[in-house]
Image (cartoon, rainbow, N blue to C red; front, side, top):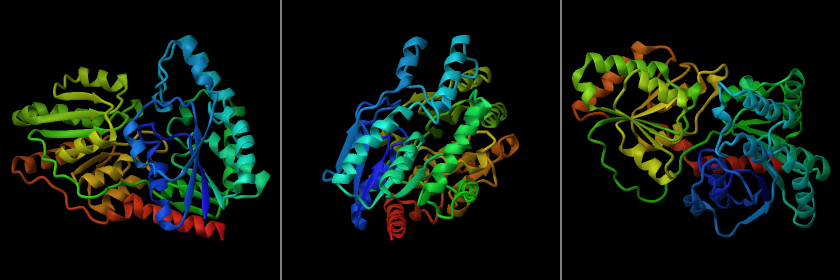
Length: 424
């Protein structure tokens, strides 16, 4: 059984976008499915991590085709770096910046990778006629890749599975885009067409599933996960009371209440003030840095981006793992990919977000930590103090459970069942 997987993110891409399908491809052959990957030959990735190439099976076919990305043209005029992420929209753009944002939002629908659709359909139609597969899978964002699946479905009547790693019109920054009514309508129309025409739809959480059920009866929740191989070396814990956040921390994800809680605890507890140490691993927005300076928090280190291997080390040796959800309208459905690797690290998690959301359900089900509401400074202080006191007693640990279901191999087994069910 063969499946063609269409994905923009592929090694040497780093960050969270590449992990999901890289890991599925890694294990699919063990469940009787041969993956063929189609990706870009000249991508513009915001983060690079060459070490992830080691996870690509040596005996699979990887097809590559060039893409023209208008973002490169826009960045030339903007004088900006190419590593800007959609999640880092400038809240105070210049006049020229506003024009560029408007162009990107209203002329590149669903996104700036739309110009890869037609050449990809032409290339893949020829390839698939000569090399038949049993199904195709498209993964978004970028959601323009689903339009490749939509066209191939129409032309070749293939079984098609669309995978939503993130929402489309419900994504956290969608309402921040300077979209016209016509552009918003176009987004919703394309999203609905993809959902209605897909033979199966994969989503990462129940909230997204509930939103999409009005358009499709074949929606499957398939979360992200963690990957462990062989014997894991013992990594000694930090001697300081380290609190580590892994991943992007943009303006919407800036945990104001957490910073305030740290400030108040530092003023109230001299020993805590000496022993806490906060580590931010990944890209951090200027708004976050400014707030830290305004509160005069001294023990905060911006480490920046590191390789996936180094991320695992930071997670395993940290006393506490901080997880901040974007404080946006769609927050209830946000499940950050890092939660699953936090589970693998087996260190106490302090999450800040909706206490009745999809993320909260995972944390509660696995007994992996606590989640506190966005504005609940007092509860954050209480939980931090509990953790700190256990740390001083050399007894800060977590008794997690039900985590094996999130191993990438088990998730791939479930994916293989969905693929076979869809094909049959």
